[in-house]
Image (tube, rainbow, N blue to C red; front, side, top):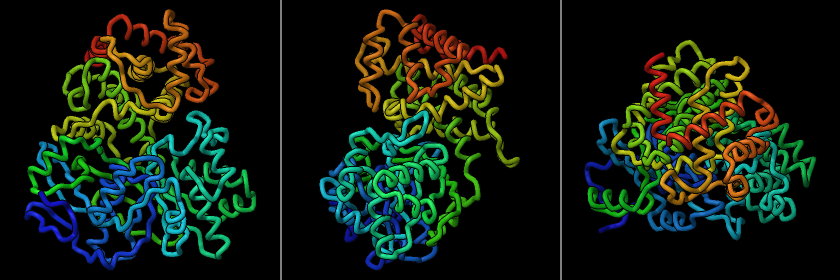
Length: 498
């Protein structure tokens, strides 16, 4: 079959961009060329260019850690790819995105990427590098200055490994050349992501050049954003089905849902695309209420389903939420434990938001794997669960669902499911965490206590809080005695009887 490129005659069922890509110029450099960026920010930019005809906002997208093959695949396809959006009933709609004009891979030689970032035409550098890509301690949010990659960027600043190192290098080039700094826009699921990105960049700069760090503090904008779209990892089966349906091959295709939302702090000194012309995008002065809503209700419930659903034998979110007890317990977590901790604008109805999320989770066209969501849990659960739990502890209120989620994570990271089958883990702390399990495998109480003492995840407060420790101990013991399915059924029954 033919390969996707600019010369390919597309089927009439496939929508495409309506601008001259030969005239498209790079205005954005994006770090983290994953499926989410291609289904969200790049597609929003594509749609804005379609609407406005402004051709100075093309994207140069780069991978800096892994997946060189994706970069090669996109280059072979003229940096074009398809986005297939599954409607609520499972009907797929496919279109071609043309906003990415160049793709790069930074290792082992980051020269071309750094030059592109230092180019005066680059006005925004955006990031989707996942929580661990910021090298911040999950609890304190301080930069991990002792991490080997950060140490490398301190000692070899002209050959940076990390996103923060590349940003510091490029900003220094611009400062020395008298070029105004680009805006740095994080699009990752971390609270106040602009503030934390600024913290990581400034802390790294300060280790080698305090004057540069001061210049960054005083001159560089770090707007915060909240992004919302479910983008499962594309599987070989997805690619084959798409090829059979459309009649051409796209090795960089992404699969996503119909829904998308983007809340953006409007702080762009060198201008920005009019993303708010596209449905779902909105510029605001303060994103914090929306990011807390999303982190605690969507991401928090996703992790709950991922860990406990996997332990119960389910492999996707759609399969897990189709179980009535998981559906009821998840809605309880959203409405009775997460939503009550939020302060939202009057126009936001959190029960409606919960019902919308549950509908999205049940989308039959999405195969969002629980194992994908379960990755990097040590980096995710502090903002998804622990701040909400702290809210409940201050009020002595119930957080049984959240406690069961934490217990599910502790059970999951032991590396074996309830049937004794091995779990393929992916977590920056997995060696330390599994070491604790091996050490205390004969004493669940000591194992839970040892995990809670990990200040990198739980901070200094929760490890000293008797009610928190007792509640997690109880939830973990219940998991061991009953199994995940029955433990969730008990949570569901409490909701129905309340």
